[in-house]
Length: 87
Image (cartoon, rainbow, N blue to C red; front, side, top):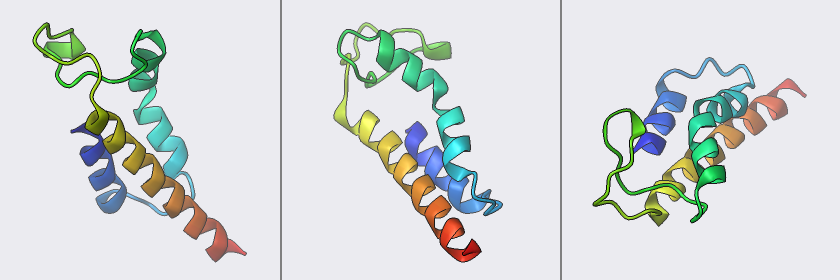
């Protein structure tokens, strides 16, 4: 669900300054740390409070990853549009 939040943040809170991708990478820093430490190299389906592991959750879920990838793609497209407009 965090990916959907990031996509909305890009749409409604984007100053269009060409730094969307950098800000999105920053917002995903904890996700990257989890992926790097996870034996499954993925994001879990569910977590408990403060990101604590949920024993009833699947350890990696495709849609969790895809939502974050969608947000990164949207940020990249915004930055690409900004770069083209500056030329």
